[in-house]
View 1 (tube, rainbow, N blue to C red):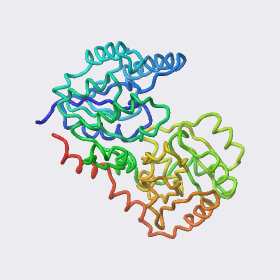
View 2 (cartoon, rainbow, N blue to C red; view 1 turned 180 degrees about the vertical axis):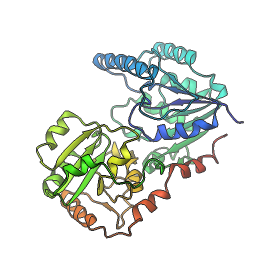
View 3 (cartoon, rainbow, N blue to C red; view 1 turned 90 degrees about the horizontal axis):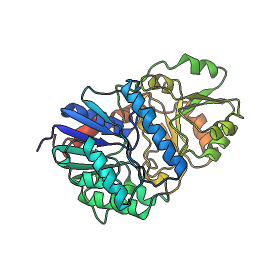
Length: 374
């Protein structure tokens, strides 16, 4: 059965840094007459200050949507569902109230293909009624200490009952192997029309004059190994380090002690390619722990699509990527050696972009079309 309505439950607002869920929703939207994109409803019962912040976020994001100030691409058939709800989870009364609030704003579930990156108590009830239920997992929630047992059990039920479950990492698939053996491995991809080789940003290049090369990272610092990164920067005084995105003040304070560091702040969707092309090396200095054991960084293929070599810590889905243009390194000295090795460009000139072109979102969608009622 083909559906004309797509209901999407992403984990972040649409004006958040562009992620996998944005890409999938945006690309699939052309297959539907109308698309409802709901605000994130959350999974955790927060303290009062966090609850108040969520109310503030609701008003801020509502104003941005109403005024058309979203920096990320949208489609004509998009409708953003941003409404009042109770940020309280897993109680009978709050789930009943929130289900009624969501249902009053949502498409009839039976008439929709539902895409969801997560479920909570009231969302699960709506999800279960979907005409076609697609659960896309891009976080290893069974290993998240901040999530309650109820939250983890609900996700397991959703995995068991969904029509399609996709996951971007091998460990999440392994966690659910006993209840679902047909989870589709759908790793991150890249938009080759957005990331491609260009000359780069002159403003970044001018700051790096006199250095042997530029290494850079884009994203947030939520999973960054700050101790490793600080030591790598100290060991590489001849390399300029560029950090693109939103970073905590504590991170900036810790790294700004080095003269060879600059923070650009967040760069918009349409300008990011130029910034990445200013780099000589893309870096992924992630912590290695249970939380990151379920992470496949989107930036991996984005660096490669700009024909940039990559250095990464041994994340489970990247540990086997070692080549002349991708180096998996654990400690700071190995990172230093990898930096100077890659600056010599020992790989075939188009090796990075060649790997990226085999992993585009267009190819991922070709695979998905065999599983979705489109």
